[in-house]
Amino acid sequence: MHVANESTLGHTVLWAPDRESTNQTATALARDGSPHGIVVTARQQSGGKGRQGRIWTSPSGGMWFSVLVREPCALSQAADLTLLASVAVHRALVSEGVQAQIKWPNDILVHGKKVCGILAQMRTDGETVEYAVIGIGINANFSAELFPPEMREYATTILDTLGRPVFRPRVLGHIINELSTIYRALEQGVGGFRTVREEWKANAHTLGRKIQVRMGNTVIHGVAEDVDDNGVLILCDDSGEKHHIHSGEVLFSAA
Ligand code: BTN
Image (tube, rainbow, N blue to C red):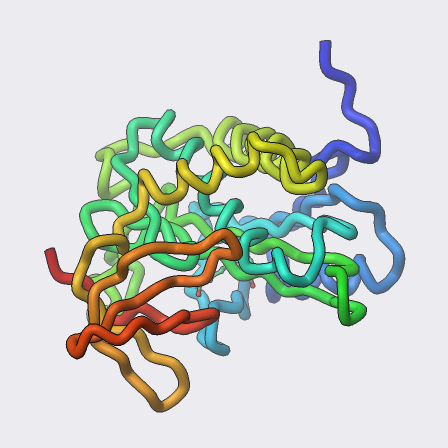
């Protein structure tokens, strides 16, 4: 039997019908000294946060939650931290029958459309990550018709994909268990961690494709060749020059 203690992720799950943003609540709790492993969830979010300052549409029926991880890794491994969260979600969704793939850095796609986004917000002390709030949003049990029309071109939901809802408590439990396993490997820096990175690559939608990456006002076109040991994307542009992309947004993927 596995007994949850305060080092186990998900030892406490705080649910509320409405929150502005579970990342915001989890960050406030982290500042107030809440323990490692706490999970904050909500039925719906009025101000869900996406990457690059975007709003994340978060209606009832979705899965909106944030996990507080204290001192998970060195700052140099911060990109890995979020990359590996996508592996945990990928495992759980595949076990539900969803044909999920991972898009760099940490989106989950089904048939090329986004079904989950991950937003990690961290506090660092210069060398290590003091704490990280890993926010995960899964478009689960609602129809994509709730999205604005322009969003339906690139976003989908599990309900629309499978034609049936999933049992969200089971999916949440599965993701938290996978996250626990992966972060333990990250903490210990063991070989198992390398295996998880390989798993990310094996399920990556991005690698080997011709893509465009936007970084601020710059867009680079090229082929996504690899992801290095620190989660950095290696892009070979049309002139053969290699770029190391630490953060950016993949705008377009063609077969
Ligand atoms: C992205 O832009 O792809 C990241 C989206 C992350 C959304 C989740 S929903 C739960 C958590 N709370 C937030 O406000 N954002 C994240």
